[in-house]
Image 1 (tube, rainbow, N blue to C red):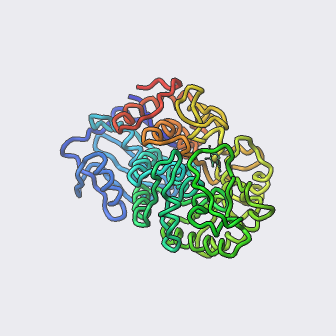
Image 2 (tube, rainbow, N blue to C red):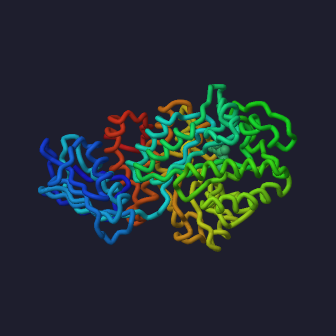
Image 3 (cartoon, rainbow, N blue to C red):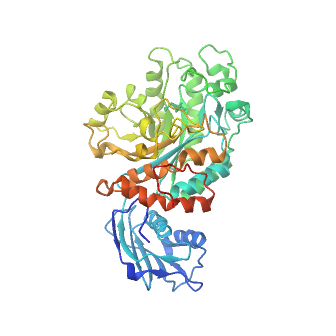
Length: 467
Ligand code: TNX
């Protein structure tokens, strides 16, 4: 059996004669700050905990930073060491992948740590609503690939998905629609907190996105006084042909009260450091309205103790936000210039990592405006050099958005995300020196049976010799 860890670890030394066999007598030992991850490991491998367990999780100096870990497997047992619980959690994902169905853990020494801080997945719950249980299931899947950020696109023209107590019609009216005319849905604040808590338990940070000042039709249906002409629009329940057709009025004071109220509630529900304020496709915002709006909203975000993130159009208004690059054409002079002046860039190039693009012309669902994205297209690029002149240290990381115009079911989500999300995870985590398509393809093939066992309805890309 060869090692098939995805994302591939920074350093891995197989010691074939030193495999460890998990038996009914095996226990997990994890004390103090290691105990929550120990409990998680006990649960996923169905091994009880015990003070003298042979699988030992320890907080200790590893020399590989706060997200890295060291994993040693020998016949006597498994020792996983990390500086933090987050490092231990990453190590547990590796341990899981080197353990076969019979409980044999491959002998090895691994030293591992991430290349980029931000390894994200975005889920659009606005175009089609996904239930808290479905979101939590996606979180569990992402965690296995060391993804550490879930960006939730909570609002758009077709639906508003988070209850805001000070503006209750956002939930009752804005949340009641979705593409195709279904009932939509809206997370209560308790449900949202529960999603965030679940993510936290998987060492994933939630970044909530409230997309403003465009992409707001659902909010305007609920509160027409926020619109430019004050007239209530009709609910929007199709994909439409033109994006960026709606806008908050950027001239009315009520708009800023609305935004401040919304962001205040979202910030209070969100432990992570970022709030994402959208800012994409503001074609319907007249004149310089969008730029002025963004400059007025940014101090609200910082005043709430958060950092702002926006789609890269935000740079037309300010360099003081993380810019999420989503173009299908790179580089973009606006983004390059900002990056060279200190703005951090999150890479989501549409032609590489938009998980809503079809794999091939035969894919049953998906867009193709950014091209077909087979697995190898998603894998074969380098975030560190993608934006020509921009140095790697200006890149916060990579994120794979999954827009949901064409998704309806849980299986649709699985099909579009897997296997491409594993490729993006490896781009975000593994050192460039370990990058290689053939090797990736061989390793990934071994994940097919795992996904089958987990009920993940993945796309069987013909580029992979699935096991
Ligand atoms: C562009 S990417 C959008 C989204 C769509 C997506 C579909 C971006 C910031 N805006 O509104 O859902 O394309 O692929």
